Image 1 (cartoon, helix red, strand yellow):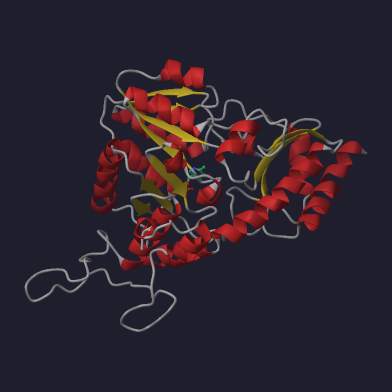
Image 2 (spheres, rainbow, N blue to C red):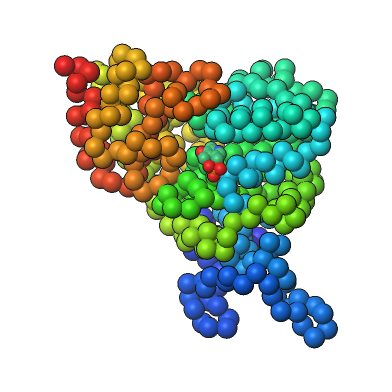
Length: 388
Ligand SMILES: *Cc1c(COP(=O)(O)O)cnc(C)c1O
């Protein structure tokens, strides 16, 4: 089921439950069965009656996941990979050596690492710029720019990129715009509707939502340039084979069904935590696009239905004080990653190889589904030492 089959289009909550799935025809099972078979029977005439023939090329659980995410992103098609980074690698490989691409100077650190360590030696020409500054992007674009990569809000400083304005600039240059939509999820931002050609996710985060499965997915809108690149990405998926297992697809598809309620509840808590920390004497600065004094607040309010459940804050003091707060929390788990049911806290500067600007006194928080009062009390006891 694709949203385009319906008029008017179904709302995200409904797509998440119904898109990509229907009761199993052979058993009547309502929850989809997991199809582990690597191969599929051909008909007597040599045809493939179900469309499946070998599970690297296609599998019912993967097709269901891709259909569901495509409906949520209002996309024409989607391709699931074994991780978000496998998506990034496939998008870069879909370009040609000598092509030029522009990346954000602040984004998920693995994206920058992949670009610098793998794509550049392979022959991709790259520039990095502050994607919150349209002038900086305009100066970075070249006649042979094929791709512009954005991530909004950015990691870990929550800078906001204006997706529609960036899409207009990219289109004028003839470049494809891809948006890493891992943080806002399609519940809060649908980049394809704002003019992006492609949208990608690390589904290891909110889409899976329980911190127990890795995955990545890329979806394409209606633009010919986007579809053209997507065709090469699809070939890389099925031919190079960085595909998720049927069980991983099943878990991710199950996660999508509760995505809307999870991210809305997490975001309600994140907004309260952001406001609480902003008024805290042991906190220097809070980075959350929902705060009116955030420099990207107006753009975020325009392109996001809500501001998401990720935030960062600088503590009074420096590196030692920040690490101390992370050491004292009891409910927040000190761990990387985000988007799961449990709240996580992380000192990003000590794990990012390529972060040039991440302050040493900064902690990043992924707000989970615990009661917000418990989370605030936990942060308060961890911060109280600083103001003592
Ligand atoms: C985690 C993450 C990735 C990488 O995804 P993996 O599934 O870990 O490979 C890419 N972009 C963002 C914004 C992320 O948070």
